[in-house]
Image (cartoon, rainbow, N blue to C red; front, side):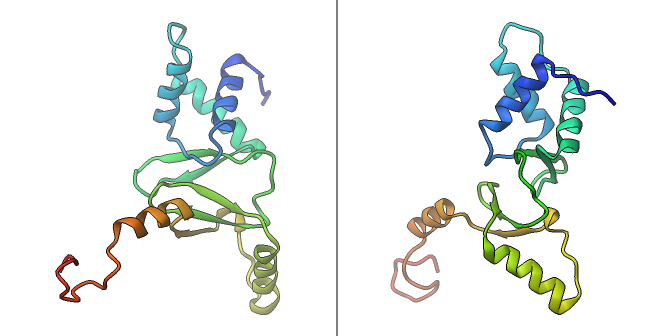
Length: 155
């Protein structure tokens, strides 16, 4: 199947490249792209899905099952190789970080060598809190343990 380098495809790619740490549903992408091209032809979902399918096939965009919705989400990953590292996903903001470091590669190697298990690291996601969300949560959480009886805690 031929890949066409249309203005719509380029607009989608540019938008995703400018938001590499965010994930979008197809609905959200339609809305964002329509906002960018106010007054012009609106984005057709069938065209958007074709472009997303092509970009996923090239490895430029990743498709994930959303944690909070019954839809898939899409995220720009560039031309990187997502098969050699783990991913960190923030359960608060939804941000996805590529854990591209030697420790990630060492862990993959260890699991393979010592446990005979081949990890599909392109689909591996470790869930937790990103630094920004963890910092915000620490600011909002009292310093005392729950139920300590000091009168400042929530019970």
